Amino acid sequence: MIARGYVRSTQDLDIATSVPLSILERVAERLRADKLGVVLRHPDEHDPLFGVIDIDAGESADPIQIVNFPPSRPLGIATIRGAERLPHLTIPVATLPHLIALKLYAWGGLHLNDAGKDVLALLRANPGIDMDALRGVCAETRVDRLLDEFLERFWNG
Image (cartoon, rainbow, N blue to C red; front, top):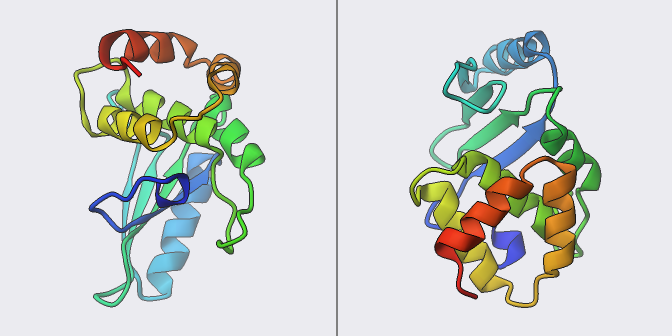
């Protein structure tokens, strides 16, 4: 989020993947073998993700989450493939349209939850956003209805 102009109170790092659950389980086992505090959260019917690994690397490090998107959902794969390198960062990050699409997916059409607040903050922090590009990414990743609903309900920008 900070790479896209919005500083949140949380200081975590999210790493996106789109792998079978068995691979995510092996990653969690390997991290535990390296003596990291690891919690693997399996997917359930209320979670749009395909598992999450929470990593606690100790007091001197910020928390890390490996967020796994279902291989059948185009959003995770499109975000990973579309990630770009920014001059001041060493790892690729989601493009602004993809980041907003991810947040819309997490929002899910509900009340203004944390993910919805993130969408608002990203839109406010990036007033020059290319709305056509955002709409294109949302259509490609099948969250275009969520974008339309969100803009109608919460955005007057």
